[in-house]
Image 1 (cartoon, rainbow, N blue to C red):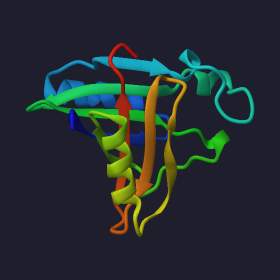
Image 2: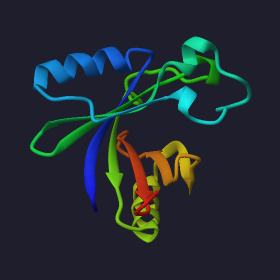
Image 3: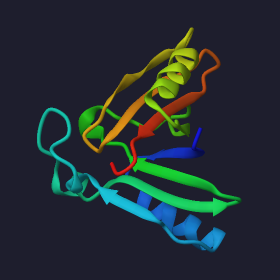
Length: 144
């Protein structure tokens, strides 16, 4: 494994929350992309407000740990709730490791998205394990 981080889902407050966390931890957001930075998502065009929301952000907080975040979009049926607002993100060293981890964590679990190539250049999937913990598995090849 390359890195383990914590992924937070927000309902439109990701940028505000990360500005607050940056101040609290005395650090800076190291990555921020918006939905407008990606090709169209979902069944239709996003509103101007949704296009300005955070697609992905990263904030180092302590001891090499990184918080990551996204804004969930109601227009795509996404709602934050206890159980989907916090996810452990594993950045696997290979596609094979990603598949192995996803398979083991998904066994006996529920809901999620199977491992697949994503438009942002990653091999990615998410699952809720049998204990109710959300896991995101991500593998990005060098140079992607």
